Image 1: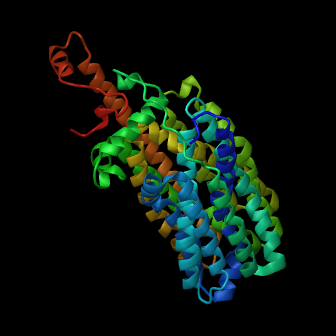
Image 2: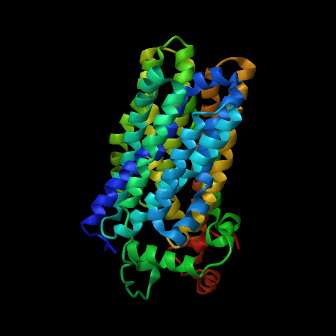
Length: 456
């Protein structure tokens, strides 16, 4: 077995980067095949939109199942099984005779494989890196950005030479490389747990170890999905509702940008290249946004930085919806790419700050399940809108409304809660207030779980 922070850890990091690029980058290329799939199966926009929505929904909703796989068989087996499912799903989909076959093969089988590969690759870094865990996660996430940049270009070239069926068969072989990456993820020795009297002052690594220990003693669904937090934790409620509403429109540009641009007279190869620009921007913008978020000025205020990026991302869609020209679409891709980078780099960090590492695995499981619902219905709703009106630009107006409103909700709700808690704490900790001193004696505050955020 390997040791944490050893030389083999860097090889595992490279494997995780490649896995991120293959699994998270692939969905960004689906829009390249949108028109061809629609023509082959004589499907409506609504029917065609179900394909990418199923892939993304299964990619998120399979989180709890992946957690069970990792717990029982380890990250190595989970990634290899995921790669096998990806390969089988994509190769099988190349023989699809109806669009329903495509839903089942590439959508459900392939999507579940993507989920296993991605989430197990994220988990294994937590075992291999203790001292440099933040750096490892940042480098691994850059793999997804590289994938987003390269997949659309490769997809367009394959589509022109081999058609979508040949492309999907090639994709099956490419995604099988996840099995090779998984084989590198050898089991790792668990580091010795450092004794700590004060859990609130423990290091991040100890927090993770305590969190894993807590999960080992938990039972039932709460072990993988934190329903108690959803019912009682105000900040978790706000964030979960906001992000669930956000993804209703957030992923739509990745699917509809290419068909929208081509329907407006821009060449398909140029449209794919513009979509790749979003990925290239992410490669550089994500590390920068991660460094910016670590500044002291944002300490305890990441939710506001995240909400601001969400609002900016939503408003950027007005550029795409209003102006259809090559320069305008470049401006849109730059704005969308930068704001998307901030959202991507902060979405899990904000969740960790809200619930603490001890509850993060369970909170994350429920978080992804709820996300998958709106991810599943978003593209078909947009497709129905196009079927009724015949105008792709309305999809971007819809995205603007959904994304911007979610950002405004999270910003205002968090601000109101902060003001309310500020007044409560001022009253409780006022030395001249007899009632406040009495209440203070009866309140136990745990910084890792923020129990003051619970509705009592």
